[in-house]
Length: 162
Image (cartoon, rainbow, N blue to C red; front, top):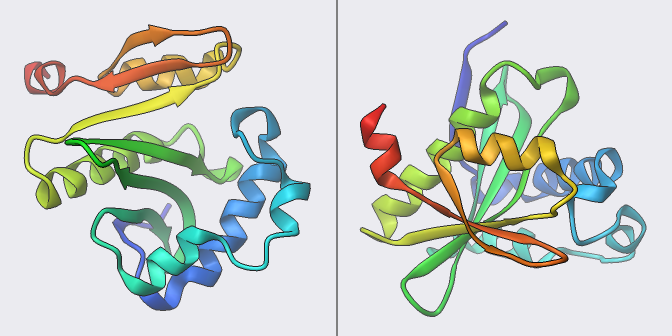
């Protein structure tokens, strides 16, 4: 396997973001709030504009293998001093190779570079056990449990102990 690179998507990469985002919705429809069919009807995703405009508080980090985008993780800063991770996805053929772990931590590190000491959250569906356990392994702790989602917060203290 080639070396994996992790970095923020550049303005010219909005189209490859769209392609992998659509792929993620098709591959794991239960994991996302949007559906592949709904997304196909959208001419241009808001995040495509954010990538092109390089919006400070909204970015997509990518995992690249041989210049090919194989995974994404999106960060969005909220109005308070919190931010959220969305759209975590790694192509099926690259899963199980620690890429998602490195991608989520690379995204968190970038968010913390841009916004020191920001609190980072994500949501996961209660029936998505695989994602839930993955997020626990990446130092997210459950903070709110609802019928439709579990809200988890990143714990830097857990990261520092490793």
